[in-house]
Length: 421
Image (cartoon, rainbow, N blue to C red; front, side, top):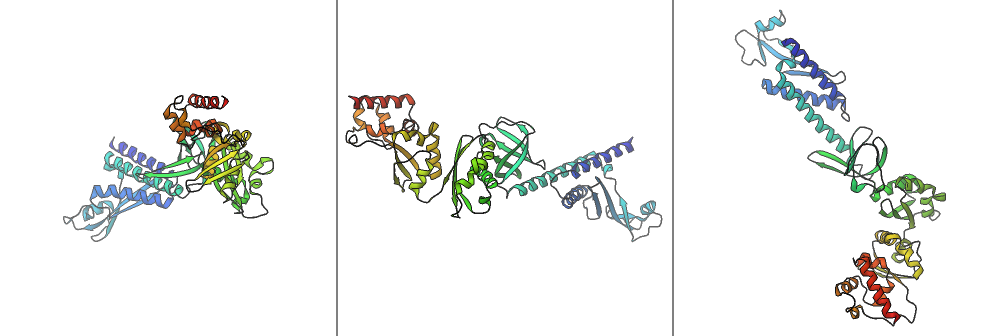
């Protein structure tokens, strides 16, 4: 019965090595070293030393052999049973052994009991897991900013688990997903490597589909001139899944950077737009002339004039009344992206016809009809007079003054009534 138990343990150990043999991302030499070290750690605990043991590991076959080497000494003179063997005992192994010779005897590791086997399995599991973590971290730590493809393995509320072609786990958090993205188990998706966390030697590869790097890498893949260094991407502003603005510059006068990025009939951006859930992509020419850059960033609106405050990074943009809605865009999207792209706070104003500019009233004079805190909120964004408020876009008053739409409409009605009287 005991012999059968040992056999079962031996089979269990061989199965363990077959598991480790199939471990991904660990080269053969390193795996052999880890297995041998794990055995030696357990042997040292059992015998006090592992110096006189030979450990032979064959991860290809999933088996192993252990030999203990002991010196033959005269009967009754054994001082260290781990390193010495009495002549009488040695001759039981091989009759022609003599004093002074070395006996190499194979050790059946399974006979040391279930605890020793469990200890070995735990040691192995710990060391292999540590190796896997190190390998995963080293593989991805220098790839931040690169696009990776993977298969959706699990979809959770807060994140999506993705596995690469080597079965490494990658994380796509909810905050880094395009709102319109829908993920199904088994499908392949692309994302950019945002960062690699390695807290307590437990690496986590964080992906993103909303970061500007993702759009930048997609453009580099689709536009050869960018890869060749003839066109540079200077700045990207994104509202993921909705709209993006990209500022590009050409280093070759013969190349139109906008045309090269868009392609014939939009052929080069079509695949990117589809990848980004129909995100509309505007490509504009970059220039160091900030007035011209802001003008281009507000496209498709046509700007009449611009006042720049470079110290505070603010710009006052004046447009014809019919151009204001184009500059602001649906939900204020165009002006938001233009501000992100140029890194200037942009305030849009309607041009006031001559003769009307002199007829103006300070907001404080309306305190009997408009709450003072509302007046203060509007003044905080640089609008001190009635005409200035009426010439400012309604959306700007709602967003920048942080007022409810009903409050803004009340203010505008009061001001318009004053000028109609």
